[in-house]
Length: 305
Image (tube, rainbow, N blue to C red; front, side, top):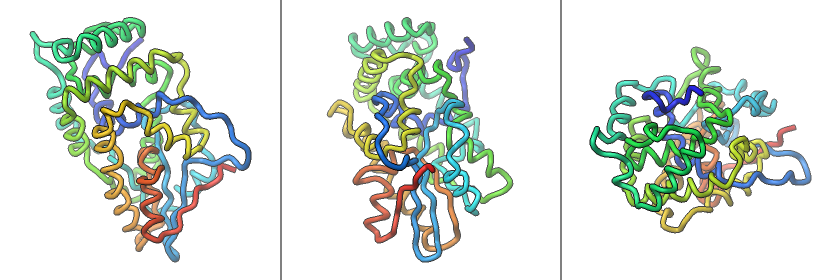
């Protein structure tokens, strides 16, 4: 298998800022189908004649998510503007290379010198069970290991960055619609690289323990997205060790108000707008949808049919 971490994969790293909080969702049990009309993770926000379509993205996906529901593609077609977390098609590869270098230890030092012995044992067993050579992760710093290690089963099961929802719409919008990014890759790289080693250690240990319980072929994140169950998604976002509360808040909730500000700008004019950010940012009491509703906007989740 041509595993993407054998060589520096700058496009994959360019998406890394989108992935750490999303990896938590991959640990969730796929929800059971509920009665009633099938929903999708698309909301329609309205202010007078102004409309913003808010789509929750998964940044790694397989071919199984396509074709997308018509209500999603119709919202995109009606929109003049595409807003994404980061325009990964325009990421400066020299910047990505610098962060990749900063996330690796030089010769003579390894990840194993910076993780607790119990975490080291978990990670080594996990990558051996996955058939991944130890050198693939041995020189990653804990923050980068926290991004990359939980992605291994998803990548092996067929999920790809190039099939991610945001990448899909970026490619469709190229040269046809205005594209705006909510954040920059530099901001997200700095956010990830600032994660303290002790928190990254806890995160890696927890993720490896959870992912190891599951079958490689079970893309639960994808199933959760396909279910359109916003309540299940919100519940998943709170399932992590309490010690990780500060990390998860910095990765998710603390970023939501700015995302809501950008969406609100288009609710005041300049749209229609198709707004695509990680699904975990839209749901819950502190999600973008709730923030916009608290600001007085009408926001309704759409049915897939």
